[in-house]
Length: 366
Image (cartoon, rainbow, N blue to C red):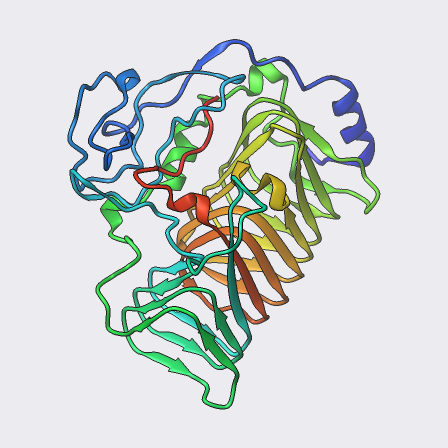
């Protein structure tokens, strides 16, 4: 089904947005959800466990948990796993975490802010970590530490400001062991039938080969779980999320033009892409005020490729993908990728709220 501007307007007027007061059940996977304050030592009562020890197995597992769209309480844990019953290692401890290398000839700058208290002064916690080499031949300004699993290569002719310590040949700081990673493609596949498409009257092929002009209206998505067979097409794509929405995309997310995702107050968006992401134009995901409510998960082993200027306000989880940007990249949140090779300047505003002790980084219930 090709989506034209007339088709989009008709869809919006047709009312795909419905109330999500009903109770849904999140898909069950292998092990218990890893939650709780005291180093994950307390398991979720809803998961049917009592005082379970948080083991070294991945926290990115699921139980069937009753969920309501009006309740933003998290249900899915995306932690780095637990090295012991009292040691919690959240995934998003760094402004940027690379499972292998960071290589760039362009500027890299980090700073910190707190989404829970935007007026609070920044701290020296906007750190960068790689499990492999770190090669920066441009200007470097980090409001935090630099932890490198291999060697760090810095350009002596470029300006460098490192407010924290530099550690080379360090033990892996980014928990990239395969057993600790969420299988995004598997999670998407599990929702091919377990979604709200039928209840919402939503066509999974809506964005399969779309062709929209630049002035096309935004596609509004309310509360619910939307399954897309694929997302690819021509023209700018603008999504306006008005409730707690989860998007499951079975293949690649491939656009030839701009992409924008905008959140209404109190809304949230979790976007699961089984394959790779490519955007041929500018990308805008949320803004600083909604950053904690936007989460992007990329399961492909190729690239997260953005050709235009990118502003990403949220958490990006792409443990198998290489981040390739061809213009400036500004983030408000955190990046977790397999490799980073930006071809433009990068500015990372790390959200220190992600370092809350014992906290798993979680999407909302649905």
